[in-house]
Image (cartoon, rainbow, N blue to C red; front, side, top):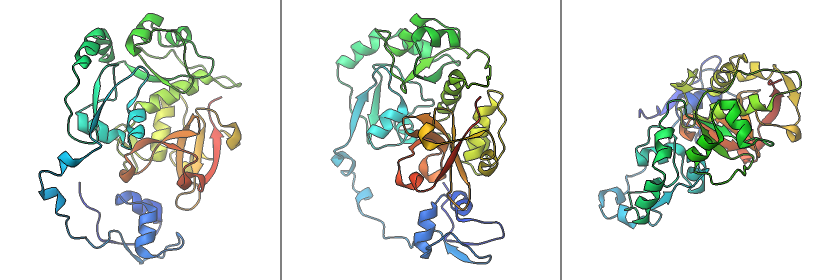
Length: 328
């Protein structure tokens, strides 16, 4: 990775957010480095982007240091788990978990052993037996049509199976389920392609669920300024790409998208709504609300690209502008 330059000279049209995003730092870091109390900039102003390098710590030269890591552990995947949930519960990012385990996708199967926060720990003997008992699901999970579905209130295994043109039994095998009970907000692995979307005036929970499921497939995709494809997204490029898959055309910028659809009060948010923030003056960031106070968005290079965040996090809570509903 190319390190950020030591300084940057402000040009016409620049703002702190675009400068931070283009150089792999955050707005707060730039403000702290330059002693800024606001986000006002002047053309020709020179901004420091990196702090003076500190002396290299001696710890990396000691081969014994990794062994002293008391947080090194393994985790056995349970039914209903996903990489985001595992990563956040262990203080890691999805990208870190994928890199540590050599994963090229986010598909998991019950019984799979995931390494966390360090070098591999030999799997306990019982793991082999668990893996053998679920030999079929991994084969199904390798299907190129496998995707993640976010359970909505009122869903049943039968309705989800009908939506994706599969069977209840296939969904249960793929997710290691023994019963039919579902919990709204949890995720299921499903195979097949969702039936064509029908947009109605009264709203469409099924459409919203598909939008969220599609968005979740791109967790960990790197942030790329001006990006609007799976090779890399910026915030509005991500939302416009996801909604485009369901015939919903969004404007290319966060500010432009804020002028679409209908306004929604924060207390009335439902999955699929667009949520907007003022991160660099005016409406400058957008994400997709997924329920339970969380939203999915392409954040920044330093935050891991496409991630889940919470509306209650201080950074986003203080910069929240509003929401728009574009699914009708």
